[in-house]
Amino acid sequence: MHLGRVIGRVVATRRYEGLEGVTLQWVEPLGEDGRPEGAPLVATTAVSVGPGDFVTWVDGREAAMTCPRAFVPVDAAVVGFVSQAARLGREFEPPPLPEVR
Image 1 (cartoon, rainbow, N blue to C red):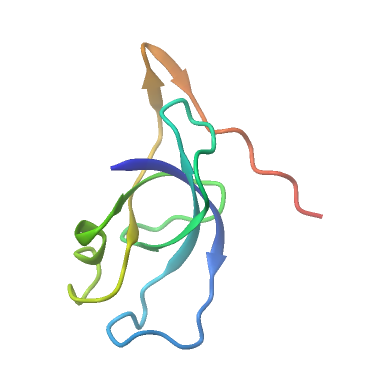
Image 2 (spheres, rainbow, N blue to C red):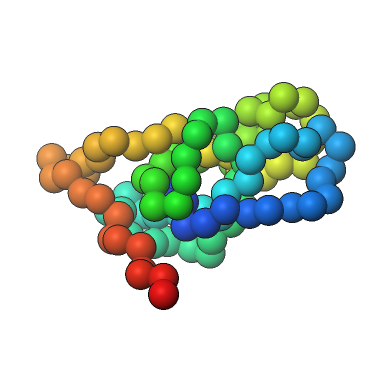
């Protein structure tokens, strides 16, 4: 399980069979200190989240298992909403999203 922040929504007009109705979000992976770590990725969502939300996500086979049909080509899935996080006794939050004009 990994930490991340939803940085946007993804709209796909054509989808792989079995992914109809599955929400896609653009997720920024975060390190254990809440700072961005790695390239953003597209993830399906098993919970209702949106841009700015602090989340947990899984990858690999577990990600595909969150979809209504288990055998679909999914590499990442948001599985939880993080309301509070701490490392070594110190609470942290990811840095705020940049303001969009």
